[in-house]
Each structure stands twice: as structure tokens, then as C-alpha cells.
Length: 287
Image (tube, rainbow, N blue to C red; front, side, top):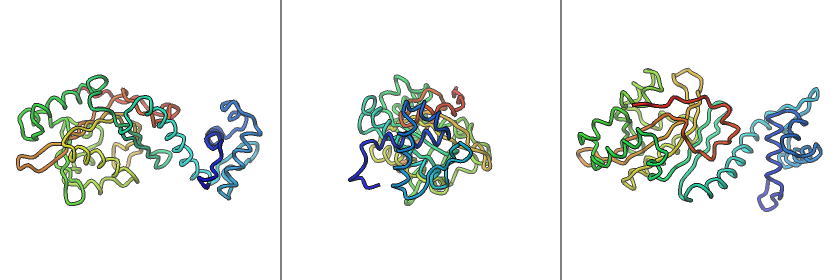
């Protein structure tokens, strides 16, 4: 669809399409949208005309997504999420706080919202608060006794060529507690690019790492994602807070220390409230 002639009702067209795709029932969609049958049909027809192919077909009085419709649905939902996020962030977050939406398929997804670092003291998990204190007292030195005592609750990565290398997985870290031994114990020595096969995940991860290294400081965000707990296991919904701290090895080389606390206390405007219905209560990490 040419942006120069984008219809003024484009958002309503997307809402009609995503709602009918979810309900697969015109009457239910009309009721949910507070619209009319003619309007919803017109929105779908207009979108199909722009796509040049059918997105939904009616069979036995019930709608069904075509393969083209299934592909279009992910993009439509992302556009609506971004619109809601733009409005929410304009009200609640500084304009330079980054956010991410990754809808890889119906089972694999990731949403994140960066938060100002000083908000850790308001709604941040206790584990992250203690991580900030330890990092500060250690003056960002990984081998300082204060930070060394905290490292069992964290992971450590270092820049390696054009990538990142995992050099430590704390035995009490949320990473070690979430994943089984087949994943957590084999993570040490792996390059990050080899562990990020899902589109967009690598860029999401290194954005925070580069921020902490380049600025020599802290990066704090809230995350909702679906992740497997074993190599062949299905994705499981989880929510958590994450702290990434720029640090130094004794020889002065840079590193990042990552602390994750699984908790339901997250604020992620990009995460559509309707999607919260599929989130299982995540374990509150206690250390």
C-alpha cells in the first residue's frame, strides 16, 4: 500500500482485519469493534484489493485465514502494537527509551521496554537493586570482591571479534534456573550469534550490551517472551526484568554483567493487553 495514499481509516481497517482473524466470526467481530457488518466487510475487501489476494475466505458461515492472510496478520498486529506503544511511551517513557517487538510466529515472540535506570529504585526487583549497589561499590571491576560475591546470580559476556562470547553463567542465575543443563552448561564459550537463531533476537541482545560498553554504565529493561526450557522443548511464556552493566576485567578489557530476575512486575506497553491472557504466572525470583 503506497504511503502517499494511505487511507485515513487505515488503523480501523487493521482493527477489522485482526479482530475478524481472531474471532473468525463476523457477528462477534462487529460486536467487539462496535461497528457494522458492512463496514468490517468493506475494510477487509479494501485490504484484499491492496494486497491483490484473498486474506480471509468464508466457508460454512465461518471465516478462515488464507496462507496469505496468516502472513499478513503478523504485520497487522505489529503495526497496531507499535501504534499503542507510541501513545503509551509518549505518556510514560522518555523518548530515548528503546522498545522491541518480535513476533516470529504464533508460539515464539519477544517484547521489551527499556526503563530509566533510576526507576530501579522504585519498581525494580531486589536482585537488580543489589546488583547496582555491588557494581557501584566495585567500581565496575569484575574481580573486585564485592562484585565477585554477586556474580553467581549473573552471566558475563565479553566482546569477541565482531561478536560476543559467554565467559560465565552463574550457578544461581535465572538463566541457570530457567534452562536445563543441556543448555546452561554448554553456554560458556559460545558466541552469541550461534545462540540467536530467531530473527531479530541477536540485534535485541547486543543493543543493550553495546549500550553498556559504549557508555560504561547500566541498561535496564522489562521483557516478556516465549522461550523453551530445553533443547527440544516448546516455548514457554515468561516475564522478567533485566540489568546489563558495563564492567572491566583486571587487564582493562571490557565485559558486560547481565542480571535477570523473573517477575510479573513488568511494564511493557508494546505487549498487547489481550496477549497477557496467554502469559502464565512467572516465578518470582528469590535470592
